[in-house]
Image (cartoon, rainbow, N blue to C red; front, side):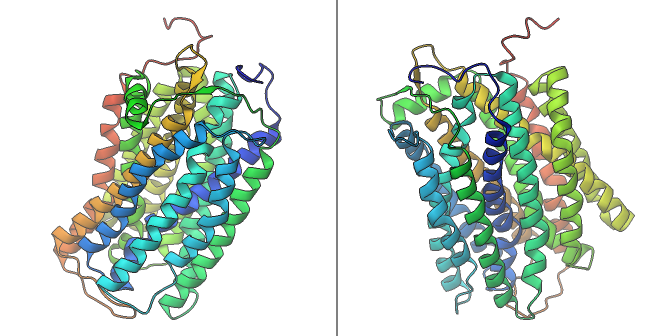
Length: 446
């Protein structure tokens, strides 16, 4: 359909569902490193917290520079598969192998191990962007319906919950099966690599029935296109709001294994708390869509951020109310996280569809900036936690070593994993106040 948007008829549900399966790959790649990579470096490969934080941050910095270019190149791609799916296929064929290699457990410790993980994580991040950038651009292009874009992202959030369940609950269980932690990480990396293959190839094949509208891509260079992107009045306020949401979730996820092992005294609680987050996350996605129909997406997103922050404050009180309070607070975090994942993604699709009237699109650039920003925000979240650990005196260890952490280290660990992400999440409400894009068919708000 050259030069036109998708027709008014809803797309087949199979397209919605197969599109959603791609979120499994996104969720696994974000969750497993976010949950386990820092503690893998500090407690298995004997990397100091400060250096481990740098290892996680560096690939995201490189990805931040490259992802917008991937967006431009996908905008300009001409293929019988459409502009997005060839790039998604390239990511699907490379990311699983690189992901497994990150956790392969080299016969190195300290700085040598850090260099190995950093190099492989850089390549994995770039492979992920080849899939994620065009994947994120698709809903803004293949439907012109404001609320169908929410439907796409409802499916995406539900599958993201499944991914978080696999990466947040099952991955730690697999890692703990062998007595040798290095073997455990290798086994977990191979299993999750297989999950990535199935998810990404399923999306590439399953979206073949989606419309393939042709828009004239912008011919400007990257800097000129970035200026256009941030001149987009809706995108430039939505983008920082989403960054703060991603920083908050990244900080909290990275802190879970530290809190369960050191504050609660039982590493097995990691899987339990992640289940308590992820089941509500999946169940709440249709509720956030319903609320967005009643009060619009911006207000629903603000409510979800507030629920997440309340859950974070509840987790701060774990030493007082123990496991029952931790479970209840984790449920609140999951309900809030559902909205903060689904609604900004749907709002991004609305921004892509609300560009200029020239018929030219730069959805790939907006998606590239968004994707690299989210990846960077996740790394910043992990970096904030590693900074809290370093400042409070956390002591790293090698595989099989047991270290008794000081009271100061335990307090820094708890605050960095709960209060800090709650505070960052509340900050997202400031830019969100200035977001004005609404359903064009809704009429003026009374």
